[in-house]
Image 1 (tube, rainbow, N blue to C red):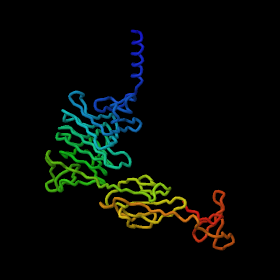
Image 2 (image 1 turned 180 degrees about the horizontal axis):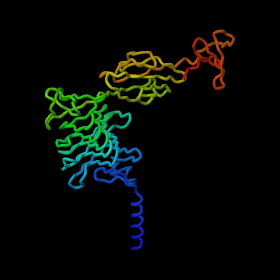
Image 3 (image 1 turned 30 degrees about the vertical axis):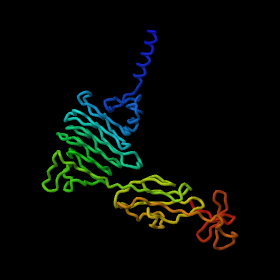
Image 4 (image 1 turned 180 degrees about the vertical axis):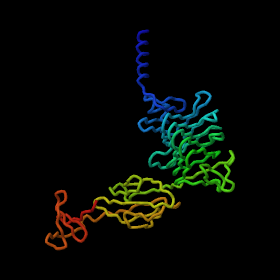
Length: 357
């Protein structure tokens, strides 16, 4: 029996030695090739080393700095955190003033999954320590993600880049306090400061308009996304008629896109064989346009649904007797099929109308 235990111990040791160690610690757990697919064993955190992407799916990560001597997420290089769900929570107790809850030696990106139906949410509680810290790159807070930060009232502030810029693009970020320490530029895109109303960005910091001083550590500052949800689709659904919203997926039923306020909505309809496109309609079934593609619509607070209407053609519509000698007609072959063009339309040899794809 002792020999068997020795063999099992040797096998386990070899397995551990063969596991690749990645430059990432999450919740005090060293990420390796063995645990990357499910870091905590509960489906809430996973890591793709090839992309340097950590996915949090309603993850609850709580650590004590005095016990592990590091923050909640520490990366040895560039790191992208993809947030999914509405209940992602990160807390670090006793965080050192010169450490951070989420830290990267390279750039740091926090974003949502592609084409989410709702804004993903992440709350970070870190006491006096810094919430987000990139040591040699930019910090990007982008797309449909809502980040709520409580903490960062010491020298490093709430968000710090040692050698980079801070980009907030389409994200909602609330900070208490809103002390930013950015060595480069602080750039807002598709987002704006909404509270307090006298706040502005100056020299890489959030300050009051009059006087230019930072707010106290009791003042919450909110940067709100300008992205708005748009449902788009085809009617009738699932008949092979497609609607494309520029920058998003194609659908033959209904999908969700996110468009910045006052930006153009670019839509294109492609009818299925035997169907024709008739127009774009809003949520009240009011005709917006018959143009295809459609680029004149601006995104507003009230724009929530635009769908393309398609109608099925009469299968008997066509020409009674195709006449190849008709001067207004032109014969040609396509994929081995004889087709006749007449008056801007194409018919087959039996006189049936061919719908352009």
